[in-house]
Image (cartoon, rainbow over all chains, first blue to last red; front, top):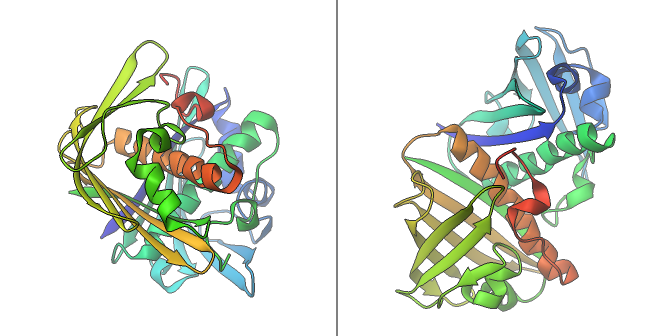
Length: 151
Length: 151
C-alpha cells in the first residue's frame, strides 16, 4: 500500500474554523469542489463534482469518523478506479497562532502516475484551504491550476 | 522505504528548457534556492542554501545520473538528517504542448511528519518551476509560501 502525505500550517487561531471547512458543505465548497452535495455527518456520503475539459469527475466520500477540531476520516466509495477503497484522513492541532493540518490519502494499491498527479493536486487544494482561512477566499476546482491537458 | 511522488505538466514545447532548469545553477536558482552553488555534471555536488527564520538550511545533492531532456538523479549527501541517503529523481517527457515532469523523493526511512511537510513543500517548488516556464518568473525560496512557523 502507498500513501500520499502532506502537512501545512494555516495562520489561524481557530482550529474549529478549519474543522468546519472539512465538515460542512459550505466549507468544503470554499476550497475543494464548489459543486459539493450531501450531508457531512458520520455515515453520510458527501458528493464532490469537478468539471473537467470534456466530462464531470465524481468523487463520493463516506464519512467514517469525526472528532471535533481533531480528526476527519473519509472513505472513497465512488470516484477514479484507483481511489475506490482508499481513505482520506485529516488530523488537526493548534500550535500557537498556527492550525496544523496533517493529511493522508492512504491505501493506494500501486504508485501509478495518477497517484503522482493526485499528490501534487492535493497540495494545491491544501494551499487553497490555507488561502481560504488566511485571506477569506480559496481557489476551489481544478481549473485554477491546470496541471495536465485533460483537466 | 517511503517515497514522495509528484507529477505535473508545464505548458511548454521545449523539454530541453525544463531540463536546463534542473541541470544548471542559473536554472535551479530560478525556482528552488536562489542561493545555489557548485557545478551540475555527473559526480558534482550542488549546494542549495535556504534562509529560514533563525538559521540557514543546507542541502547538498550529488548528481548521480543525467540523460539530456529525459532524466536527472540526485543523491542527498548533506541536509536534514531524514534526507541523508535519499534520492531525488526527475523524469521528463513531451506530450503535445506539455512537458511532463515525474518527480520522486525516494527512500525515506519512516513517514515522519517532516516527510509530510516536505511533500507539500516539493509541490510548491514544482509549481514554481511551472511558473518559471509559463510566465518567465518562478517563486524560489521558502519565504514565498510559509507553511510553518519555523520557516
